[in-house]
Length: 316
Image (cartoon, rainbow, N blue to C red; front, side, top):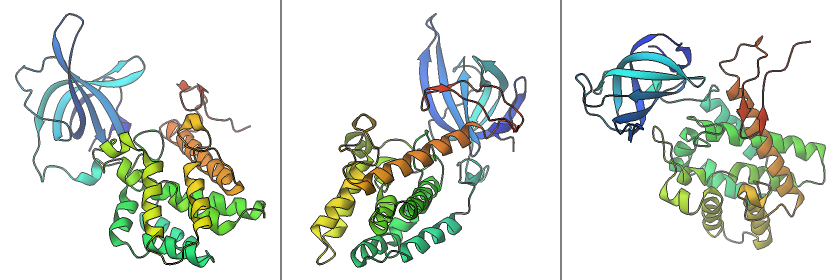
């Protein structure tokens, strides 16, 4: 298979991809054309069908697997496919694993690491709450291990939510050792719960887009509701502890303008916001440089998250 990350300008392509998006549009001259976003596990590719009614262009929809033939061009610095022929393919002509971006880390190993951290939590109520999700709830575990952590910004791949959650939890574990004032059990629990609402905010792959609940509520509110409901099932769960845990999750984006309903008001909430921000931004840097050779020190262009032009660091 010819993966998207390996495509080069000037190639003639004849391959099967997932059509993640199909949108009809009009040129300035009033001529109809189709905008496509093609996807495999290595990335996405913008594509255009300039003559949708021509011979060789068969009917298909978004989220169909399609066989495309066309020419790889360069438009404003980005690769684009000029589609000449396309048809919808049937089950058996493709392997779904080739089309879903997947964490580079082993999902089972990451899950076992997370369980080990849960096993280290000493507070009985926090431990019971964690186990009710990550140990006892088979449906939750299955979805959590598969789900992405974002639509596109960072960890937007199968296993991304698990990978991000584990990294944030490990950052928080380090913070608890570096700053003894932090309550480790509260901080670890907050780290593991901080993004569970994303399983309802975003649909599963291959769509991986915002749901109605995601648009109306967002993952922070959804997560708080899920945790609150589970707390009420645990007899005697301390109300004050529950409020502190909820506050950490409410404040984990750090600033009101970044989507948090509350700013961090306790040390654990502040530490969680830093741990989350650190992992999200380091992963974004990693994803920027996936296809950039290590000896390439060229500037990669303006990045909206960092609000600056970025490049690799040198080896001197």
